[in-house]
Image 1: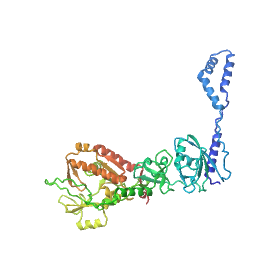
Image 2: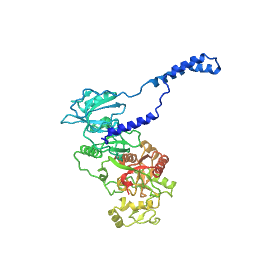
Image 3: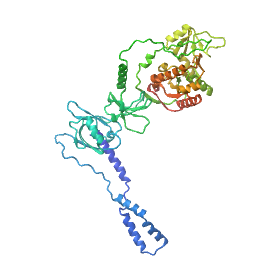
Length: 533
């Protein structure tokens, strides 16, 4: 009995009423208006002085009389609650019946119901965490609903009852048969997930109660309050004032739905010829008047590795860089020509002691003006292939018979010097970098509209990450950049921490500097595995 939630609620109410009574503002008298009238009559019988005349004038003012009248009305009124009478038609055969009255305001009641197909009974399916039903402590999962506002629910469908509730205003009275005894209140789990997709319950035909659903956007951090139901979780958006939880599809359920949609959209896979995926998009090479259109590099992983994963939720935890800890890896992602190298160069100029970049590896021969470990690390082709086999490269490729690549050790070397490592890679490589060691902060640099590209990028030259010059002056280059950015966002947008549109280089650089400053000084949500040592 002492473990009953209803008893705990009553004790809390009792304690609050006691505290209220201790400071209850009892009126001194409830007839201030008549007292003022009597004082005024007595004063008029005395010799008039300036003070007496002023007081008589104040007591006779309409506004002052109205104030005293309102005081008396409030002082004489009884504010004791009036409880509804118990119904006289309670069935004696029923072992236990609860009559519950809840006041309905603009918020939903926060409970869903279901019908037992065998017995026809309408029972409480779930209680929404933080909702009106949950806060009352009077309704529990498994309770059988018998009446709503005196109307029997026998023979009605859950939809009929929901319609009945939606038409009710003010207080709603329920007659319920308590369900099986349950254990005491369970401590709320502290599970936070980052949403990797947009969700609107109004567009979801599978949700058991649309009104109980909660919409969210990609990137929102959700606190999961209840995972008892394998199909529908209860959660609320972190950082908002609303304490009520709403229904969201569970991770397993949403993954199954995404997989089903992919199967339905591709019922009969057809064999198509695939070109190797490029680490850097190919453009016309302006050297000696020759124009080629060949793929410059090949990724060590195929696109299928990345698109096979279904983005639903990622468990996250708050993270703040501790004093003395290594800086987070800063990864810039974007289509070729969008301005990644220009942004990196401006960062290096703005803080040469704070920012640094990796030195790439190559298997080509060192030229006279080059120094090993400055422009490149020059290694043999055999050693390069051995390192590829041992997965030592973040990305690598081949151009004109020579290997080029960025190694994991080159990133570690920069971070070990207590500097911020700036790296730009193809989005296919992000999953290999998303580790507790690097804790990458991913910035997606997005191109502006094609009209703006025509104004700002005409006849511009591009330097790729491996110092290969590309010409960028054709209309199809602009369209290819727009298309590539859209594909990156569609397939890998859930891995981006922030998006910057490079419409104006100075503005984009300012936004990037501000974002990187916040990475170092503020708390961010990161995958929970990054916070476990």
